[in-house]
Length: 475
Ligand SMILES: O=P(O)(O)O[C@@H]1[C@@H](OP(=O)(O)O)[C@H](OP(=O)(O)O)[C@H](O)[C@H](OP(=O)(O)O)[C@H]1OP(=O)(O)O
Ligand SMILES: Nc1ncnc2c1ncn2[C@@H]1O[C@H](COP(=O)(O)OP(=O)(O)OP(=O)(O)O)[C@@H](O)[C@H]1O
Image 1 (cartoon, rainbow, N blue to C red):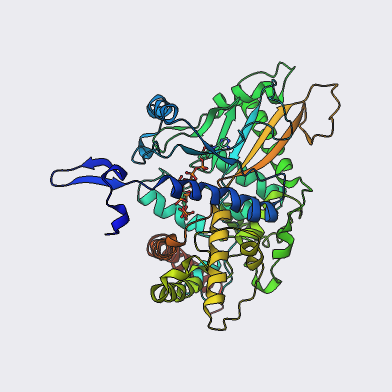
Image 2 (image 1 turned 180 degrees about the vertical axis):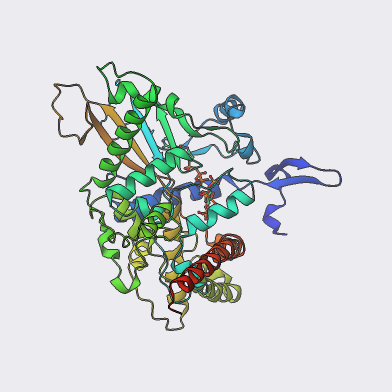
């Protein structure tokens, strides 16, 4: 073991079983500071560039008194979901990342006194890979989210399959977006949370305690959407309130003129996958009605969904094409471990790092440089596939002028709003082998269960139609 880690003060008790006592090595304060500073730099130099100034809030690294951190940890321990309690909080370094509260309006510098509604959406990957390195043809037709749902339910992460498909949300087609948002409201999983004045009123605090009562949600939302009218309660009211919420969120998601350099990433049409996922119940029902697949993405270029999708599409080769390139970088690092720094695997995430991300060529010249660029692009793409969008809404007074702030109308009220992105720390280089294994697990599970079942249904249907054809044949 590394000599530098032989200081007992850097080790602490972690847990124990029957036979083993587990102690864990704590990172040094400098390492933690550097890790946090990297998150800030990545936000500033990369994500702000791609997604635009107004959407990204990088925060800053701050130092806190250790006593305060310890007391705070004790205070909040009982509120943490059980499933997350295996992760210890860092109470040793004193460093923390200080971010604005994104559940509040970001367009207003003073704390809002008006009530605030915040909708958090984790949209996940919004495109289907078109890479020729993909080995299962199915991956060109069904999106990863929809396939992954089946594995998640089988492993007990969630109780039931969601009807949400990211491709519907990213379609820019209002009907499909309504369907996607309604599906999220039906089965929020970790893709949707709603906060009122900072308090979670809808969505999962923990996988085991989902909050999903529409009438209760409507009760919370009614004063926002129907402020001065005595709309009766009951199912009619619930539906009306939910409809308003979905409309407002769709409008906000399609809004925006914020500048960002995601345009620099626009890939050629040959590199784009199909516009719909075959597993989406929306596209299934269209097919059943014999309708054509809907139009390709109509997202306005200034909106955050469009920009996020462009960054996600930095994953040009799919994990199957990327993995051999990762192995090439690995072999190089095994031979020249000291080069890890020069290759900027763990930062710094500076302007030079950003500039290299803009090279979208897919011609492999066999070099480590090519492999490294694809690996870094993949990590950035994965980050964009796992980030969340926070939409903060605050009702405007009827007669108030909009004082330059963006405003979204609903049928009975108007909201000042802001949109921000959350969870933008670059995915680690080390997670690539895990991604590779997980991808194959997801696809194989889907092929083994759902697809096999579908094929049986199809062949039964085929037999039925054959019977039918026989009846119609002239003898
Ligand atoms: O791989 P996925 O798609 O399951 O995404 C993981 C997320 O699961 P989800 O599918 O959203 O339920 C997962 O979400 P949960 O923590 O399960 O809510 C994490 O966001 C994970 O990121 P990290 O490893 O903590 O940095 C995510 O892992 P990454 O793949 O982004 O590294
Ligand atoms: N700046 C913020 N303002 C308001 N809420 C926040 C902020 N940062 C995080 N949150 C809340 O905390 C939750 C967890 O934060 P975050 O997603 O950054 O953690 P994570 O450990 O990276 O999660 P993941 O498991 O998705 O990778 C978010 O879903 C959001 O509800």
